[in-house]
Length: 317
Image (cartoon, rainbow, N blue to C red; front, side, top):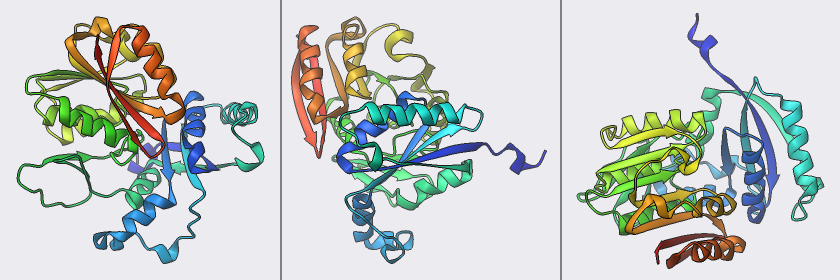
């Protein structure tokens, strides 16, 4: 068989929306089974363009930037029932009072794995997070400063490049709370970035869980890329259902509604004085998550906001 014959094809469903509707549209796409999202935000491209080192791969003159519009690309296997998926998306957009169907038209393209990868390479660059964490795409070169921690990443088909606000806040929180020899659970690990950060910060053991087989595969590759296979264990499963034992830290970067569903069983998986770090929360849902934590015997230690997103750090009361 030729190498090209093994290349998987994906249906790429594109939806234009406004920055304030990103979380709503993204949630709809994940709910109907998207295997990954690529979000093209002109504001991100503009920020990248300011860095002199970025001019080799971002040329503003070739881009028609509308800063009031973002493009969300969702990826589905070509083997799936695309007509059913499209109808489901359209119905969910129509039924959501926050969205106007006439402003969220769908475009469907068929793409190869290689084409998807190129979407990341256009807009994804080396980024420093917190005091010492450096997230580097696997295809870039970087001279690491002494004392900094390097995370190499190839997002593949899994969400999580290290540049999204929720990932940045979780990474910075891990930098503050992870201690040497801690046990960390990363629930909804995506590309594995938070698990890898925890391992590089000195965690003794990290358990990374996701229910998406694509995320598991991408995480496996990134874990191997960063030589932390001896620290991180990968499990496919739903949230804490496949977790046994207790951790010093549980980190979960998902969405508010799923966080709330998980809070009821958190205590049984956290050690005394254990820390729960969670993001993926839009500002309107902060109270929802906080109320759920308080109701289930937690106290909130920190609330951090970045743009329209929030992070909450809590511990057992």
